[in-house]
Picture (spheres, rainbow, N blue to C red):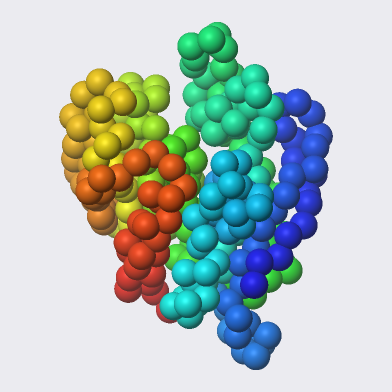
Length: 256
């Protein structure tokens, strides 16, 4: 089942109500003492329900989790929909110059502080989740994928595992290289990262960039699973097909 509620969010336009989606396993009410790993996700409106998805097609994640009886709670947060770069600002760890928009102020750090200081305590208190780092994970796609990498590296004391689908690793590449280099990730850190075969052509030297980030993460001791998705594209339909891969990676040998 998927619950929905709104929560005040200090977006760059000021306080606003943001929709939060919480997936709960069907049997959670029957197992009152059960506590589940929790996966936080960006672009929550695109994760579960077609009727809420930006382009009318979601990942259909709840259907997959129900069908396979996956013991996990998933928390998705709606992104900023301001047409003047709202989502880019919210999911950018660093400020940058964007075509047609000019300077976009990166508020990714503020976003993560809200996730950690406001959202996580609420979820820990109200839902049957494991609160410890070993069972607290994060995932997203595109700029949300970039934010997932940023989160697990910058806040490794909070998140032990991450899934980054089609991450925008072309963005602020020097700063991301520096982040990986200086990050102090624990030896049990797990990351799933992929990129679509058909996406490669949209960015210069994208294969080289993907290889570089993978190599850097491995050198840091990250337990990395990386894939080039055959025929993969930059959309929800393609990311839906990757659900078995990233969910199984996140759950694999998770500490009890």
